[in-house]
Amino acid sequence: MSAWSRKRQSMIVLYCILTSLLLLTIGYFIFVYNPPNCFDGVQNGIEEGVDCGGGCQLVCPFKAAKPNVEWARAFEIAPGLYNFASAVENPNFSVGAEVEYVFRAYNKDNVQIAEVFGKTPLYPTEKKIIFEPAVDVGERRIARTFMEFVGSANWYEIPQISKNIVSRNYALEDIATAPKLQATIYNTSVKPIANVVVTAVLYDEQENITQVSQTYVESVPADGEALAFFTWRTPFDSFVQNVQIYISEPQL
Image 1: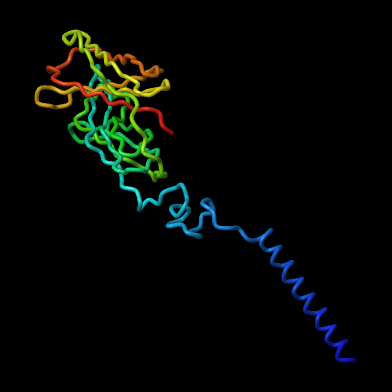
Image 2: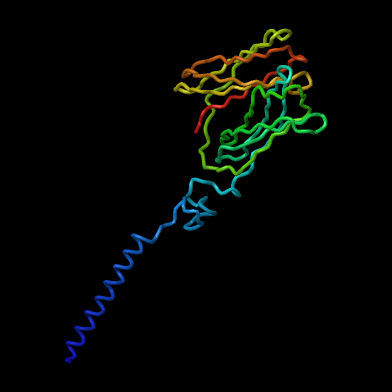
């Protein structure tokens, strides 16, 4: 066999090898290879944890501070019927989540008599009242109430959102019979806002919280006002010195 024939044969073999490698590579990327993404259950690419951080919308748990629970109380509104409420705060500046929580209430003998689970969104730097109305405990009486967050929340990067609804004033009437509270809220934006949650926290002369109630306002017109109404079945046990209005706007 001449040198030229051997060279030609070698070129053909090399061409076949390179073609096979190219086809195998293409097949691997088409049928086998999965590029790093935020939903593959593996820490890869530039992720800071499993499917979190490094460009993923999900924030790694170690990058988000836990929300704070400032207080939790049960307020009797009728014999055996209580409203549960807790003040919480999200300390994160650009991170929010939908969190799960549980209220647990105990009698004077430290026996648990009520347990209520729920979930709520928490937006960046938001301070809000978590409210569970009309919890029936029968003939038992609540002595202590606690609220804690449960489960693993998925935290997401959320831009800072300006507050559009503000409280302007309130009027409290019929304290000695069936108390009524009327709060005026104002929409500072140029668009109507629907499904606004308004919570009223009442304080006595010693700044102790005496009652909490919550209501929904279907819509607040653009650059306009709406009224939020609260009622109680029985008179208050103490004088109401101050009322604080919390407003939660739909964001997510």
